[in-house]
Length: 254
Image (cartoon, rainbow, N blue to C red; front, side):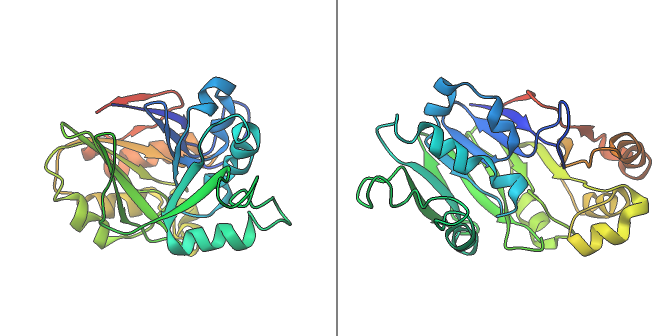
């Protein structure tokens, strides 16, 4: 099982793509702008999209993905998320005003897209691959995900701030190999991080102090223009965990 990073930036710009990961060839974890780098044949193979939360940098490619390949495929693309997130997508995105409701096209019995609700702690198994929603603490309803091959797991926090329930769950993962955690802002923007429910390096260090396992730690969602200073501050504040910056096209073997 392989997880490929399509996008991991907290913004856009040349070479920057927002959050999206491709599990094997058929499962997306979030659908930020990185999905746009896939070819048509790759887009056609995507059967599932697991969404952490409803913010545009994480869902922006879902409408275009379905619009581009929905009519080519023989089955619906399934969008998985907690029910509050699905309701936001229904009301504010696929609402016939901002974008067509692809759960009704070409007709409701055989739509291009369908929704499936997930629940915290309840594992979904797809051809031997297990995905489990993890607690997140953000300004909208949100989750992270554990991805488990059986041999190894990866935990992705999604967008989150201080989050004790996350560590309660993560510290119990006996085969954890990788942790991907966000740090959106540098320390001088701590007030903004707190208000928007993200992390900055000093807050990251406080969170990692709750992490009881030894594994590889990767930083995602860095804001453009602050990448270098934020990573430098992370090394100063949280260097004991040897965190590395997540990169586009990085591949994790699970």
